[in-house]
Length: 90
Image (cartoon, rainbow, N blue to C red; front, side, top):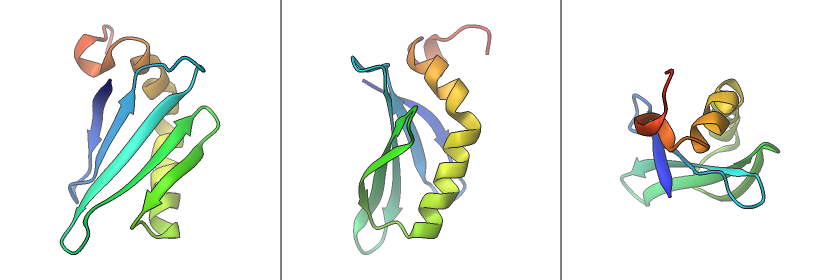
């Protein structure tokens, strides 16, 4: 299951998975694109391992890396509690 986390001003959506069996969390980033439909990428926490990158530049990935690094502690906690909608104390 994927849970919404953040929508940026340029309509980029950042969502995350529940805690996976291997103790990782998938963070998925998707941005609408007029020509390609969507640009997307997946980052797996806690190692920040990027996979399946399509359409994003290296600079964009660096920006998303920074956002994820600054929010990783929250994303990991939310992944264990059913996302924002089901988490308490937020």
